[in-house]
Image (tube, rainbow, N blue to C red; front, side):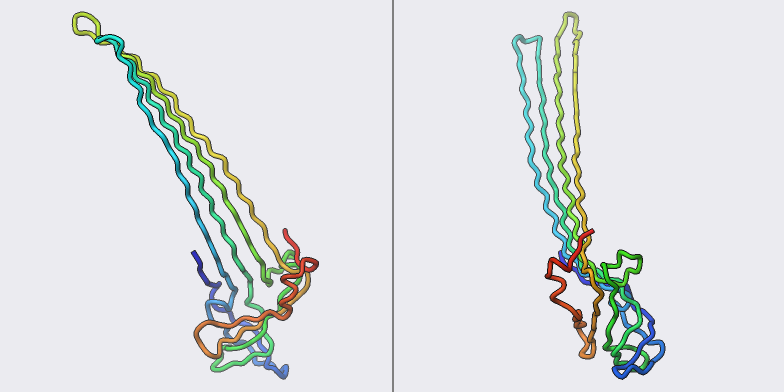
Length: 206
């Protein structure tokens, strides 16, 4: 499952390529306030078995054993590129108060300082391992005078082991994110320092 989205529009201060102020302008949805690109995969594997064993040594006595077992392993993996935007923009192209081009300033350290205006890579994996077991043992004895004695014992267990692994990654330095929506359709993004996102000396995980 893949999805693209954002955090709605934003009204920000803008300057043109010459540095002149354009005042308050609107950066349109869905990316004006932030971006959110997601890839999600879910797998679910189920196995089970059931058995009934009956034993009747005489016509008056019956013993029956019921056994059930189920194994469920599910995995949810999600990878996201997220970023809070909504800050002042430079190099803006504006028409009717709406910016079609511009550049956001991104803070260093992936926004860990409290200012969240940065791009982060978020990944999360949730593993659920379930085990269900059920046992039943029933004994029935027919007595004289039409009476019947019966003993039915049962035992059930359910066990779940859940692991949630999550991390956030970003770059140590500040950066910029430029957008271009002049042609309509899909907005084009470009970071100022693309090689930093593949340089292990400049990437951190928290």
